[in-house]
Amino acid sequence: MSPPLFFASPERLNGENLLSRGEIYHASYFDVILPDDSGDRPPQANLQFPNVEREMTALLESSLIPPTVLIELVLASAPDHVEIEFPRLQLQPGTKYNAQNVSGPLLGRRTSREGFPKGIICPSYFPGAF
Image 1: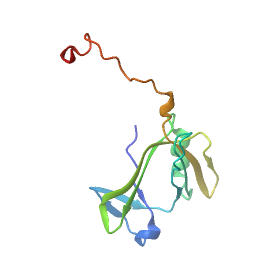
Image 2: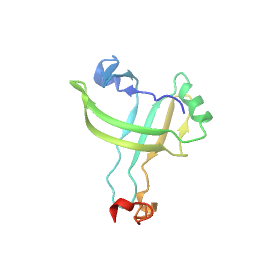
Image 3: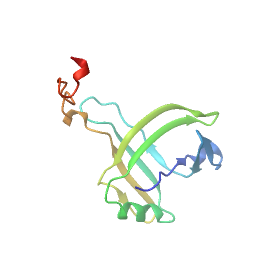
């Protein structure tokens, strides 16, 4: 597993990096469409960023597991306080890239496919509960 990459929008920061909660977020141009709030499907977002140095394209092509993306909205005036968080979004196979841009859909977990209840509460597993 590779170390996480931290990016911040330079339009809001005058091209300067941002220090937030002890991590340096590198100023990088990107466009993001935030996840929608539809009850009939998992949250879906879209991410697009320039493919100038081709490093991200090489990283995406070499990855066997789809990258997991965390989107956090913070204010430059209060960088240690997260306003909104969209955790565990995965880059989907429909990712497109060319010489200028990389863009792809981000999809949240499908909780409707998870078993309920998660585990069985019985005396053999939880003797103190009975």
